[in-house]
Length: 476
Ligand code: SF4
Image 1 (cartoon, rainbow, N blue to C red):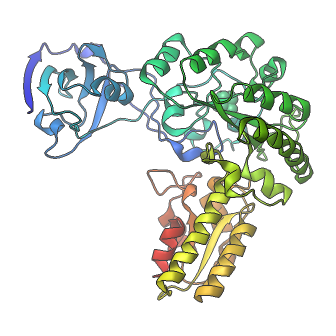
Image 2: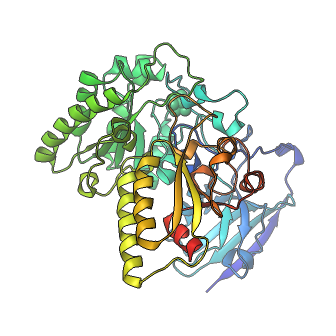
């Protein structure tokens, strides 16, 4: 049964917390897949974690907690963010919360709750720690100067790695963070290794060898049975060929403690002018596939897993077949674009089969234009042609060039509103579909700041950011 006791403590000195503004900016840029998080950035670290919302009739509401209050401690232990709150309240039925009300009062709230009873609280987003590296391929260097500020955030945060699969290099991980990963079981962790050769790693990260050497830190995580997935951003002439082979085998030597390594190609926009970088070509991708396929065979026979998985982009650029479902195991790094195409293709086949079984027919809006990135467009086109032939729809797939970033950026997630407007002549039918990844996770806004309604008005067509299943609903 819930029991709550409030005691109001002395009001805090207003000087404790000067008036500061929190700049909410969105997105993370350590990887190409920007919309995994919506972090807040502030220059001043405040104590505790701020309550964003309290569900009506919840435990939090009964405790008179409100949006804007901050939970400072749980059972005498400091709360730094909502992960701490979750960790420190897990399994506890008797709790003492120290709360700083938004009015400035300090409350001590004692409560008893049933096991597993939810508080009904949602919290502010985690403020990401930023990296101290100068990676030669950093995506921040490839942004247009006027790109929105969120695209310049160099996040390197073990909490976001655990929560969203963002990669960290572990170069600046603190002792406190290592302990926290272990104590709170923030597992798995996603680590950008790039090369196990220390000279090459230091060169790629733009740091000295001492900082680049993460062997001790990694060993501590692995010894504590924290699951680690590694990543290699493959840069021609830098960490390819023998360096890549060495990297894969040295990481595989830690299997199953290191579970997988994703190998994704360097992506350069037109703004990357660093002479040390060589663009990825189709020929390079074919060489990589040939080399890594041999390694995969060897590892499969030794470990029972391919372990080293190539990003979809490498197969698409090479114009080679995407591997079968079984190649990817349980898709350990799908969010990094490793197995996404195979997963999509299989989902598409299942959807077609289900619709056939159900005798589905499209009843409205049978014609529309689906925009996607240039790399995926030919694959999607084939699928949609089958769909049209089977169900009588008239859907058209159009490859959208990325003129905002330029270079060899061809993935759907980095397309912008301006790119869509440039393609207005190619819009046909009654609606436009775009991939969901073009939008921020929590808002209908694109990377260049345009929102879906603006684009809709400019194109004179409704624009839907949808997935496969939603496309079917649109047609039904
Ligand atoms: S400098 Fe390196 S680690 Fe830091 S954000 Fe850029 S790519 Fe990521």
